[in-house]
Amino acid sequence: MLIDARGHACPKPVLMAEDALLKIEEGIIDILVDNEASVGNLTRFAKKNAFYSETIKEDNYWRVKIVKGYPCEISESRGQKTEDRQKTTEQIKGTEKDLLLIIGSDTMGKEEELGRILMKAFFETIKVTKEIPHTIFFLNAGVKLTTMNEEIIPILKDIEAMGVDIFSCGTCLKYYNLESELKVGYRGTTNHIVEGIKDFKKTVWIG
Image 1 (cartoon, rainbow, N blue to C red):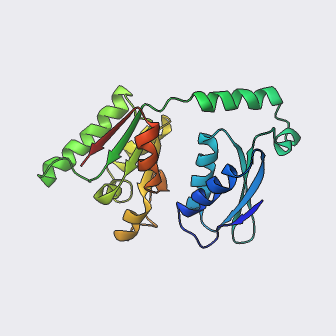
Image 2: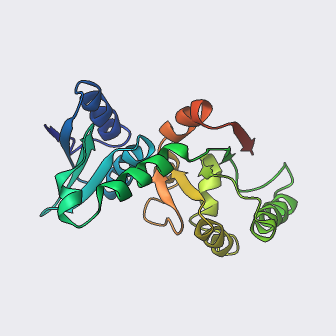
């Protein structure tokens, strides 16, 4: 099944893929998208639902292939054993989503100068103690931390290297004219917040 999602911003391509997959018991869908943010969101959607996926770069767009319901011959042709793939699927299904951390400001509290010091100390503490959340989502002025704040960006990169998923609100990046300035993590959508309410054991908002 071919789905042409070119020209659509996230989360539309993910919603189109989800709708198509709900209509089939098993099979392969190909989603065509024209931006890397959609590629990332589609592959994460596939991983979350324990579907095999692969991405092919065409001339000026991407083809994201998602497989539902049976072992993928593409995977077999690349030498991945069936038992290895099944093990990977089980690991994905067993991944525990404990904490979604949402950062809604670039400072902590009303006093801006103090708030910036506290925000930096907060992320430094996460890094040092390794008390890491599963996902951090930055929105509103919080996206300035992943784009403009040269003191915090290296800390966030270290935290990301520990296995934390980091996303910045695409609408917020556009609002602040920071779409091309993202230094750490990926462009995200409000889908991550909505899904977090259901999927994560706990959601914490700061700012």
